[in-house]
Image (cartoon, rainbow, N blue to C red):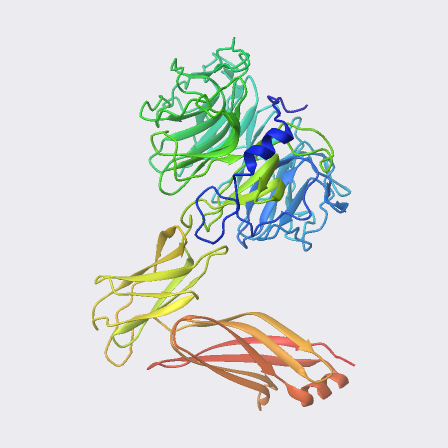
Length: 612
């Protein structure tokens, strides 16, 4: 079954005249909405991109109806783009046999894909599959066969997956291994589900084409409904009354017909819902067109009045919330106010008015060639990255500063949308060292603030030390990432208490990761990433034997703050000669002695293969 869509077009010549004024930013302090020139999709997909999801490593997963990228690179319906927009060659052709309409990136690097396919490589997979980080099929995720397409997926914190689409039950929940979760029993619906979203309390919001439940006494729910955590209809959420009145004319403000749908749902922190799609009336209010905000009980939030949108020639595909309450809407739409230009993305204030600080993104029809078909010119997905940049994916051309962007682009948008993770504090004498895992993307620095007192330190790395603290006082520390728009949300550390002599209230720690070996004609090397909890000295040795240790290499490094250091241990020519005879079994012994404290250790066993 094909996706029902409203089709619009704009001439290339008209678009070019419009886009010439939309120049590329000259610096990282560019205005919100301006195209980010550091993201350049090359090669680019030759057909529609229908979905996009930032991955934890800063890369971007995409899905769509494309099968090749420019330069004839095969990539069947799903791909991963690097943080700079280049095709990630580490993600191989997944060999999916039909369209992908939804993608979701897991924390472990795996990728959920959903659409209307029934095979991945040589393995049957009906409409939902999970791919490994290299693009291969994850055989441990085996969903049931579905009799209709899947258009939306949402990952629960427990690893379960909510799906929505045109299949018989319209909405379902899968276990972490892909099997059907029979404890989730949704009501029947009389039409499609296009969007699913999760509330923090475990309830599920669904949006689409449906107008009522089926089976038993029908319950009217026009285009949006809320389900309890077990799938049952939440009767505390009323009928949103989202419709298209019909009767519009080209150039008018009303829908051309009575076909309406909700394509995107965003859940606010206060429980309110922002919905976007194709509609021109909500609960009888004809000023609410294309995007609306509902209260937690499903009633219309009359404090949110969006700008006039010409629904005879528009559709909104995604609503994306910023942390500050502002809203980015994306799709293909024309405003009723002059100038009536085709817009792919626009930002609204929390009351629905247009945010003048965000440069509306104009889009035009991509030329054919290079695209292999003529589609509906619009942005289908617009997720925010952790660093605050906005990814645009769809079927469009943007001409910024003389550079063309086909189907994929990225704009500057807002402050960082996430906080650093794994924040850890270690106390010393009147000071504390704080470390964290930094965010990916364009982050200009980090600020650490102590509580109580407000003492702080700043850095561009993954750790810093705050001095001047009071011994005997318990402290926690907030860490925030900053970009050119300002600071993002904070992550709090554990509590520590500085003491005289450096005996802090937190146990020092050391961990070793990313161990690699390299053997060349001149010698042999072991590199590793060592994470320590504070200031002090790192000592690393590679040893052989058990009772009587023989040191093959040794390296030391002094650190001034918590963080991660790269160490390189050189086995030298002797190690190279030993590897000519046989494999070398080693123990990488890493010790960390914090300033004023006792040493802690981490040992890793490894084997270097024979190198003739």
